[in-house]
Length: 254
Ligand code: URA
Image (cartoon, rainbow, N blue to C red; front, side):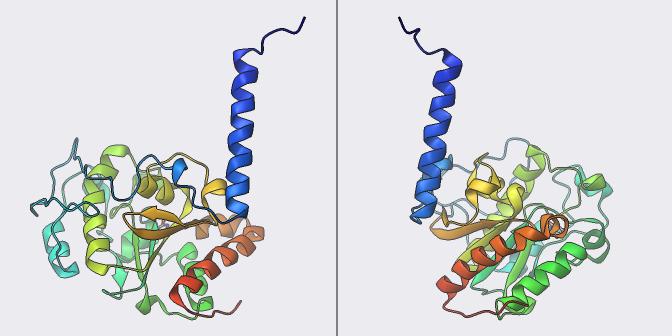
């Protein structure tokens, strides 16, 4: 007589079916929204557990439950931010830069050493690669907007902590609301996880559009990962071509 499958076998078979479903959906270009914890349009909840919220009045706005401000107003609101302990170790706040009405916004993880010194996003080695990716899309850095989940450098480039994200996220949300991009590109697993509220691996998330508050969001590998794994550039090129399709642009391989 056959034994009933053990819990472990049952779990393995569930994981296998989920993996097959994800691979099939990716192949067919279907959205993978079921991998994300919150879907755009139903995210009315912006909580600030540890952090002081910005003074902007919250509105009952389904997609962006936060008052609209210009980028300059948001920068003023951020001020000499002391909302989390990173303010004690940072040199400069890295707010973000580029076109205030960019059609494409890149969101990375957090400033590194070079960015902390210069107060500008993606200016180190990974940043130079991002600049080349942007150029390959037929764009310049001035035509897109580049920012990060965190505006201050975590010491030693350690991973951002949940309370740091909670303190910083409302400002990113306001920036995206001000810019109103047609597409967002999340650079690396950290940015993708923080924006989409999921733990799904970047290998699964990348390559297809997800819904970020009504805006298509393409996760792809972080340029720092590409520096260590140049073989993955081909996949990133595939991902940015999909972005270019939405933007109605043609790019070129550099
Ligand atoms: N890595 C990031 O994620 N952001 C930067 O600004 C620089 C490096």
